[in-house]
Image (tube, rainbow, N blue to C red; front, side):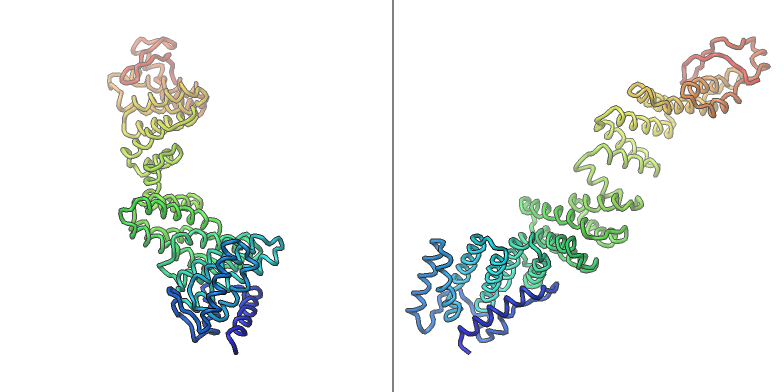
Length: 458
C-alpha cells in the first residue's frame, strides 16, 4: 500500500473513530502508531528530505506561502502531499497543518464543517506524534485544542477524553495551563451527561491535587509562580464543589492529610473550611485550624464571631476574648455590634468580672434598646451576686440584690424570673427588726452601686 493510500485510509478511519466513538477516560488512542510502525518516534527537529527533494521543496514553499497569506484552502494540497510523501520532513509541516485547519474552522459557518475541520486538526496532531515523537508536547496541544473548540459543544466527553489522554501521557510533566481546563472538562461533562461516577471524578480530582501540590513545592521561592499555582488550585477547588459529592469523611480523608503537610496553605484552608461549613460537619481540630487560618488572612465578622463562640464553648476564654474584640471592630451594623457585646457580657460573667459584663450589656442596650435580653442578663448578674456581696450582718440588707435583680427582670418583661427573684425578697419581720419601711429607697452596695425600692416577699 502506498503512503498516499495509507494517509487517505488513516484520515477516514480516524475521523470515524472521533465522530462515532467517545474517548474512554484514561485511554490513549494514537491509532497512527499502528498504521505507521515504520516511522514511529522518528524525530523531526532537523530536515529529513525524501528521495524526491525537489518536489518536496516545491510543496513546502507552496504550503508556507499559502499559510503566510492565510489562503488556507490553497494550502491544503501541498500539505496533503507533504503528509503523504514526506511525513517526517520537519515538525513545521504539522505546525502549518494545524494553522491551516484552525483557519478553516474560523472561516466556516456550518457547525458540521467546523467539526470536520477539527477532526483534521486532531489527525494532524496524531500524525505528528507518529512521525516526530514529541508525545507529551503533542498530547497537551491536542487536548487544549479540543478543549478550546469543543468545551461548549455538544460532546464534552470528547474533550475529557483528550484531556485524560494528555494527563496520562504527560504525567507529572503536564503544563500548568492544562490544570484548570481538565477540571472544567470534568464539570461540563458531568453536568451535561451525568456519565461519570463519583469515583471517576474523585480520582481525576486527586490527580490534579497531587500535581498542584508537587508543582507548588517545586516552585520553591518563586512567589510569582507559586501564587499563580495557588490561584489555579483555588479555581479547581471551587469547580470541584459542583460535581463532587463531598462528605465529612471525604473532607478528612482527602484534604486533612494535605493540610497537615502545608498548614499555612490559605487556599487549601479556604477549600476545607468551605466544605466543612457546607456539609455542617462537627467542629473539630481541622475545623478550628482552617477557620483560624482563613480569618488571619481574610478577617471577617461572621467567621470571627463563630470562632469566638466555639472557643467559648471549649472554655478557652482568652482566645474567645480575642476573637470577640476583633469581630467587634469588624462589625458593620448596630445589630452586629450588639450581638458581640452580648457575647462579651457572657464572657466577662464567666471569668468572674460582673462589672465588665454589666458594661458590655449596657453598651448593647445603648446601641439597640430593643434588646431586652440585655436587661435580663444584668438582672442575672445581680441575682447571682448574693454570695459575693453579702455582709452577713442582716438578711434584709443582703437580700437587696434580689430586689434590684427584680427591677431589671421587670424592665425586660421576664415574669418567670421576676417571680423567682420575689421569692428571695426579705420578709416583713426582717425589715421590721431594722426599722425599715416597705417602699423606702434603698442603696444596693458592693459593686452594684444602684438604688431600689424596698419590698417584701410576704
